[in-house]
Image 1 (cartoon, rainbow, N blue to C red):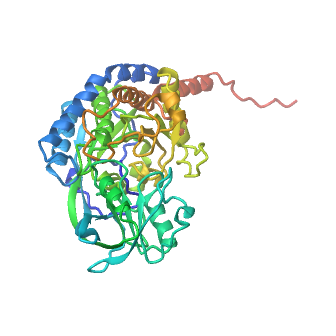
Image 2: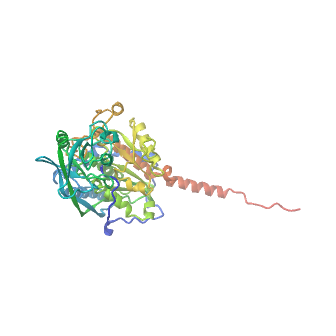
Image 3: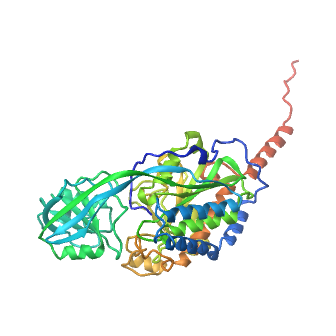
Length: 508
């Protein structure tokens, strides 16, 4: 899952690599479809934890053979693309790997220096740069509580004018933290990570920043906190270079092409690790569902699957894919289902909040999103006996550009860096006061740190809801299944045959 939000990227898709996505108004030459519950039950039975886990093993081995990661622009990512695309072609799908370009931030200076000690301080994307040589001010440490730096009151009691603010990561966005610091008078901000052995690389403020902001490791943040009050020089400078990456797009050869069910997950990891939970789990669950569905399933609606590139660099692959479609091609997409981190080791069971019923105020998704949310909630609560909670469309995953263009969306998430509460432990088990994924964006995100029970449940939910919508999207957009349309036509024809002929009353 990307820590970045709101980034706009220029992109060019290779025309030769893209699928023919112009809508055909008639249905594909599919066999007679099963009804929704029949197909959903069959697919869910065939999508096994063993099958999903095999793909996780493959992603781990790919990372181990390629410098420990599967990040965009690396040989590990390219090998991941080849693995997924090869499996899909073998299952009979139409597959493409469209290219796109994206800018990469290349660091020129990334330091925080106190006395003779220099700490690596990586500039966050969209941070303003410092002048050559940096900026200097007294180091002020924001007290660590449950929401450090998230409220203006966190900066009370100290003079931050002309100072550099040190703030622990967690509970709110980097953007909020750094704006609160700037409002208190800080000239620069250092964000200290809240998980061990992980650098704050590949993250963003989410919007153009107001003061230079960098990130240090958890250990360096703790060391810096012990130097409060001493002068610190922050030097943050960078330039950008364009790179090329690929998505993987696969679509069934059966089902109508003008009412497509789209399911997606990002395939890339961060540079710090193999990315087995983030997002090997979503990619593996999606891949096994696609393989068990097959390229020519008995469905009413075509199913399109997407594995997105450069998500960790700002949702780039999915954003630019959606932008590459014409309005009519976007209109062919009935809905989008997103799966990002579905096996967190201290898992929560979150469903994207399509109707904003949690009251946080992040905003509901486009019409149909509430119905998608209900489909996931009903399956997990009824079939798996698991209580769920809503999670906001916060802009941190690949649904972003879909909902921005009015396409209803939903999906599953088991949590990232936020701490699990006592109430959630009572519902789901696990450990209170510990992040849902303590290894988020770190080297510990490996094959040994996945909750496979959560992965199994969520993979089943993924399969069930995808299969159900492959037969009918009537509750989302009013398009009924083929059998229902045929019954309606037959009923109309019968009524027409039994209408009494109209006669005029005779006159005397």
